[in-house]
Length: 254
Image (cartoon, rainbow, N blue to C red; front, side, top):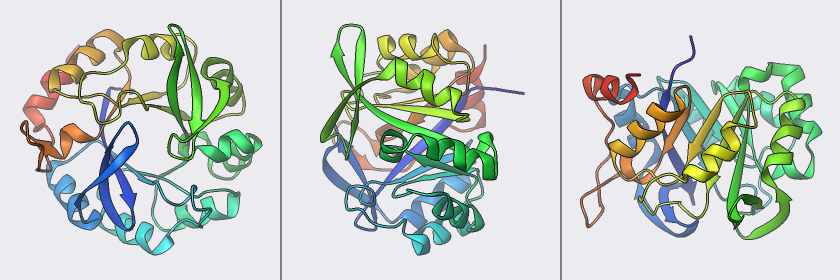
């Protein structure tokens, strides 16, 4: 049965975990393995881990890091970063990862989606799209950690990759990244009404009410959460957290 999902999102930069604001000024927040262990104890729904160096630097996925994270992770794990072909995806699956995500590769080679789906099934194929608002009602897709505007409009591209068989789409708002001032409702409206596959929105969660309000409006949706689950207080002290069972049930109650 499909249900809302509340998903911590972790960024790996220079082998450590970081958080950014509008994809800039990465702030170190800790060791990936330690944070995964804490989220194990918190019994999170699933986990998204993105290596933000791999694709930009044209590196292979860091298989050693992926293996270490997957071996500790007790929840479904999605990994993204540096995946350019089916062989790399298959190797990552062999390390214990449940889902792989591609981003810039989906732009340069959309047929890679179909190739990976053919090998592992659509349920394990995720596309992550980083977007910025272009005008009041449209968004462009950006790559290379928000540094390059592809000038590709979001909605037509979503329809294209849905037809290629992608199993899930993650939309990451660059404008809202790390700001902790709420999700972009206009962005969600645009995307939600144009696709029929699982959707996760990332960028903007500042309070648990932000999460609750989105679930109340859109019902079956994934909420990616970064800063809210690693920072505490106005001074943003690092404190890994996640709502307990009772609080989470209150957030997803429909």
